[in-house]
Image: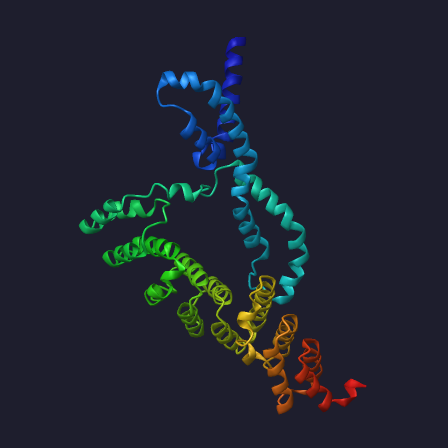
Length: 384
């Protein structure tokens, strides 16, 4: 009887262990690069040699496993945890400037907590396809198999190959698959995502016009294309997105994807067009101001500010809130171009009286000698 109880308890404990740790990250070879290296380089294939070498590779394997578990794999997962935290706490949801600013202290407090818990979960469990793609890609699907399936129109094989997480198909192959199965939405979707993720910046202009034709059809494709347009800094892609936004035929979620794409693609003209578009729509004005201000702060922090210096001149004197963002931006980068543009507006008499003080202050802070002299001549009281 006691033996039966013991066996029952043992089974329960084993079941709990199995359920609790069957998805443990350590059971996925892709999460343990050091163990894999030990196995590849120190463990002989021959059984006899393996027994002889055991005193060497077993201790090294244990050390490698501990390092993988406690150091290597958590480090690999830091970018994932960071992206999750940014997405959850720092990605604007379009709830308005006041609401977003009110949530700011909560985001600040929760950031280390969310990041730590996310990193712990990702380091401990093999979740969300938690794999190291660089090692998967070292064993790509043979291209011959893909081409054979493409030639014969084998949908099942193409679909199976597309679902394997390998991202080193050449873009022209993905394009051929799309054209061969143009009426198959699932294959087109997967091929477009694969194509967008495999394109390099050197291919930027070659495929832009082709990819643009697939915008605003599928949100996941839009996300993938958005990432590609940002990576490549595509003027054609971001301009096309602004045109689609102008049509007002997009969902709210797609609109958010498009706005972030345009603002992050490092092309000033589409950004200006986007702001001009949204400033015509009262309920969307605050949203774009909030997004634009965040982007300005980001590009300044990453030393990209000079790229927009002349591009944003046309946005001056359009709106007091926008002016506040731009004047602060030009002051921070000590922009001679910005100072000159502000002087022209001031001298022309186009500035409203309420803006004069802010413009004069910005020009003086930038400190361009010629422009400062003009200010002192036109407003002598300032120099006294």
